Amino acid sequence: TPDIIDNMETKKFVLIHGEGFGAWCWYKSIAFLEEAGFLPIALDLTGSGIDNTDTSSITSLTEYAKPLIDYLSNLRESEK
Image 1 (spheres, rainbow, N blue to C red):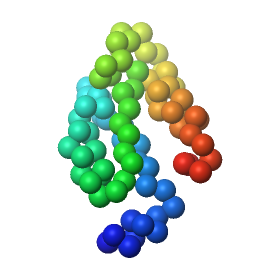
Image 2: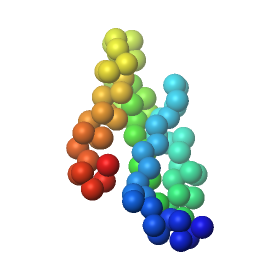
Image 3: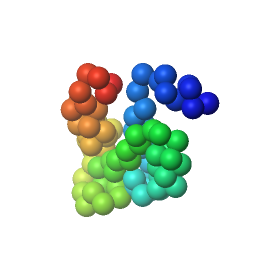
Image 4: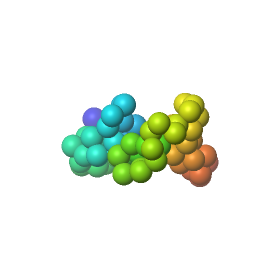
């Protein structure tokens, strides 16, 4: 499958954790993806992982997903 990987339009993966976790939960997957030639990034959502926001202050999904939305909004066109 190296030919498939070489011909992919993008090699970037954005990994998002589930509730109660953080970006840390992807450390093994990131290592495997990097070894295969991909460019993974794992983000902490609001109040998760190293983000110290008090989770009881998060009142909407938009607020919870803000780090993801900000990251995706700042990608160059060639990275989308």
